[in-house]
Image (cartoon, rainbow, N blue to C red):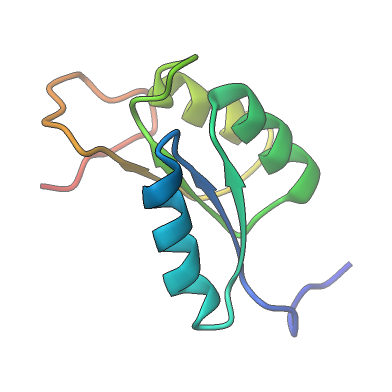
Length: 101
C-alpha cells in the first residue's frame, strides 16, 4: 500500500514525558503525525506495528540502551532513526549508526 499522500509519521521515544510532548507538539503543528513511546520495548513494538517514517530515539532509556533499541527497530525494517541524548555520549556507535557532532 502506497502512503504517498499520507502525512509523515514520526515515533518519538523518550522517557521524559515533557521532552516527548514538546517535540510532538512542534511536529504536530507542522502536520506530522506523532506517536510516543517511553521505553525500549514500547519503541520496538510501536515501530514494527505502526511503521513510522522516522524514529527519534533517546539513547538513555530506563529499560534499554538506545543503540540496542535502534538495532532492534531496524532489524528487517529500513526505518531511519535519529539518536538523541541530553547528556554527553562517549560510547562507540552500534553497527550502522553514526553520531553527528
